[in-house]
Length: 172
Image 1 (tube, helix red, strand yellow):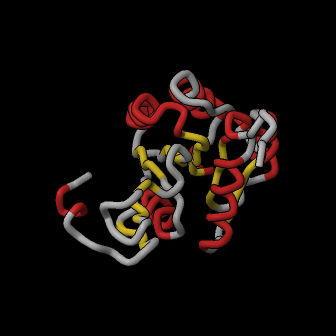
Image 2: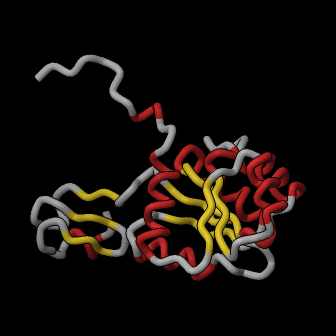
Image 3: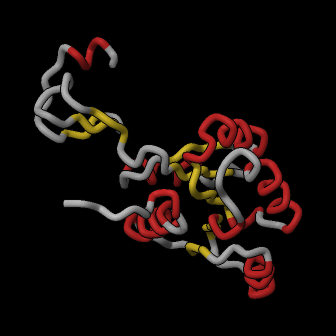
C-alpha cells in the first residue's frame, strides 16, 4: 500500500482514483473497482477512442487505451484474462483490421469476436452485415450518452464469464 494512503483516514467506502477504500480508513481493506474486468479500447490512427476512454473511467468502468495495435497487444499481454471486452471505432473495422486485432489480442486474453463492440457513426448496411458475419454483435451509434456507454461495457465484461459462477453448493 502506498505510504500516503496508509497515513490518511478517508470516509467509509469513498472511491479515490479508481481505488475503493473500505473499513473506515485506508489501513483497512482496499481493492480496485471492477478488478479483472477491463475494457480494451483499440484505437486507430485518427484517435477517436481517446475521449471514450476518459468517458468510461468517468462512469466507473476500468478501461485501458491503446492508440495502436502493437500497444493493444502489449496491454493484452500485461493484463491477460483481465481484459474481458474490446472496443473498436466503427470507421476502421475492415475485415483485415478485425482479423489483425483478433490475432494480436486473443492469444493473450480471454476474448473472442463476440466480446468485441464497435462504436461511432452508423455505417452503411453492407458494413453492418460484415460486422455480423465476423461475429461482432455489439454496436453503439452516435450520439450516445454515459448511460448507453456504461450499459454496453458492463454487458460486455459480464457476459460469458463462466469462471465467476459458483458451481459448488453453498452451505449457509
